[in-house]
Image (cartoon, rainbow, N blue to C red; front, top):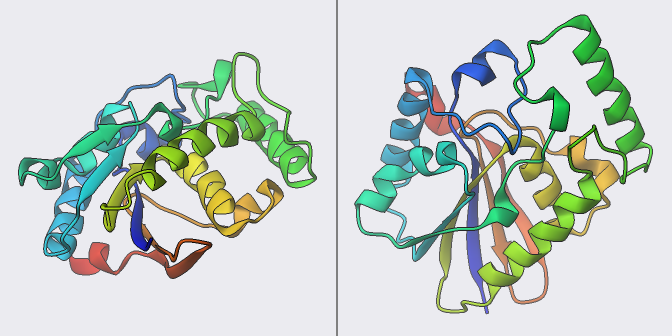
Length: 205
């Protein structure tokens, strides 16, 4: 079984622009820039014969690929693709205190403390557990050769670790911005990134 996964992060939201963490509990809309990014991505990739689209249960992912959905490509929402839950820090203004808290938790994660989480939030290990279920669903359809996946920044880092067999401590090795593309080939045994952090389609404006 071979598949090509086109994995993108959703387009920009106002909270992205303001540097405020959204997380799984914030169901925000794309802003004007995010809608433009979605349009640029659609124009660049609309000729790819996608068999299926997988999105998270948060509307910013659907809004980012709505033009593909409108063209008739079937889609499915998977909660396993949702963003990591940042708990009590979701939606809070970016302050020196919140930045320090995030820096501290990132250091712990990259040091291997992958069960650490904010109050009411999720740990990287918990996110990977639900991502494994989502991946199982995606791989259970051998007829879907070209697959478009739209998800979220931190979750995408963890998902790319899962696909490539990297430990989650390597999550920072996968940079991203809004509507950037990772193209991953699957040959039935292993995944290989064939296009890394591609943003060429966004340079057209």
